[in-house]
Image (cartoon, rainbow, N blue to C red; front, side, top):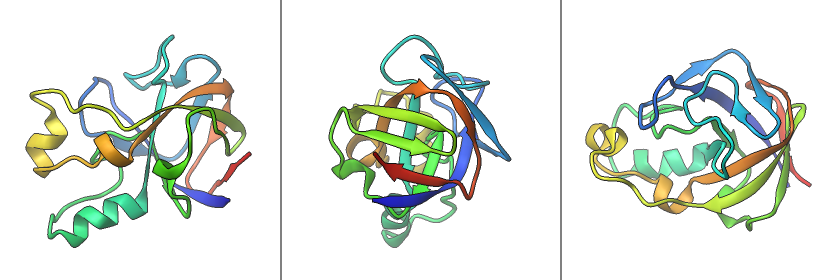
Length: 144
């Protein structure tokens, strides 16, 4: 399966809507350089498919764009939530390994407050950075 990177997004604090950047650097065993979620843990990078965002738009929720669900990488063309834990993805120059599918939304979540519903608990995925490298919108993302 092959898709593309639609956006790369970062935030200074956890739980915030992320802002798009022209390019990012994925750092091995850390995450996306400059992002609050980076660190030595299993949820270094979050990914969400544009198709999942489009489902929310179809429910009538307006103003949705990349980063609104606090995802680091927005993709197109791959149903991310159908992939299994341990699946590896090549994104730009980097290699990611899926470590978790979905998450529990915490109380007081800014995304839930702003959007009214969060799709990350069911369709967002998390990954560890196995090989670092640059990533930017338009890059190919493929299941290895």
